[in-house]
Length: 488
Length: 103
Image 1: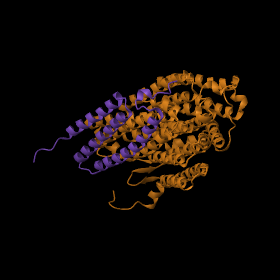
Image 2: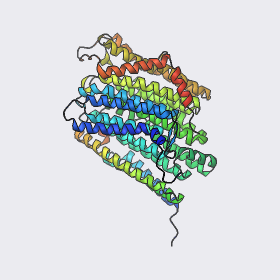
Image 3: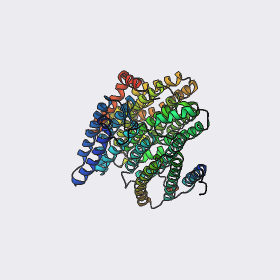
Image 4: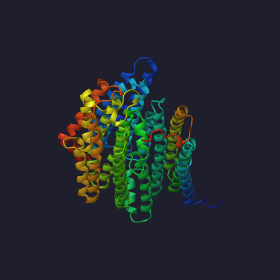
């Protein structure tokens, strides 16, 4: 490492997207303070534009791939894919939350600044190649999301959600950090390729056992972050209590970034002790799918049902991680993109369908939606069908590639159990569709307003993306297959 | 000069403190106490970092401990604010009574 040299210009370009995001977040906070009582929707539009600019910067940085800051940061296809994914989730979240926040009388600039800061943290997580940087990114992302979960601070459900997310999130962070400390002690480094080299030379000896303990600790911490069983108990309460646009964000952005870290750390740093940690992954995958799907079956609350379904989807992704192959990595990447589009769409739309104060969250409250609001019902149907995994939707190809990767790695029975689980899952999504189209609306429930503005644009983009990935998965699939080659 | 305290003693102390933190998190019902348990876990990790850093004769482990302290401070600021809003809404800090969302 050169002693006291300043970073080269190309290294700063590789860090440009994160720089833009941090400046953008600060700018929004300043504008919030100086614009007084004016409506703050323009700050949401500014946040969306800034996230778009960061996405352009990420594409530009991709034209000069390589390391930055002595190997702390790596720009490759993998980084670029996940950066664009978390920025897209950020844009969809801010666009779909402007009207929601106005309705709940909480449309302030802090919301958009917090989303931008959280996205910046996720961006650091997916681009880092060093454990302390990953930890810092994880915390930047998490601390902002703790506040977002409790953003409606007079709503007892939202504050309950925030406190649970905060306590279990920081508890998980401590495990990640303890894992980092052990791996640092065992290998003398926190840089992923150096850790890999050290673990390789120690294989079969005492040092490898230390690395295995560290891997287990990190698995616990990251397992919490992706809501994989048996560390899933916070997810239903948090997703149900948080404002719906925030649930949309939580279930897509931080989860995608945490899975990216999973892939980087376990494939690159702990790749050579794979047989030691593989059982953790299949046990967690199986538990997540089963608990998620069967608990979702008995839920009468749509938001809570979607929360359990997100646990089940984390289980499907863990199946692909168990495969420990490049096909598996590509399947994880494709599934996370598909999942982000359909789940952000479903949660964001639910924020609108539950009406003012999010008071009507039951399945029956959606009765008659098909005739009252055909567009909203059609969009919700597309998201739910994709979550089931019906052909011609993104969810179908996502599941297809995951189970194909699992079969290629010889995980036959895990694939069979996964497919059975998908069949169970179909029931509770279809139940919502039946209520929306086959039942008459009740007199006591106020009607749903028509979709408009940013929310409609975001939902149309989500549904277009869901269908595009389902009908023409080729271009995205090519890209994930090319960038699934992690540094080994 | 007396012999230095061996590395393993520090690591055992760190593991004990971390386990105490985990136990406190699971068995105490007051949110503030649970939060203090998490802080104890983070400080146990700091002790490991510093001990490893001394053993490896590297300065980086000491620096990590500073990063962890900064993050813990940020977390405390946000966490206490969240706990305050919960108390305002419910007038209790017992986690068993903060359960409005079962089914």
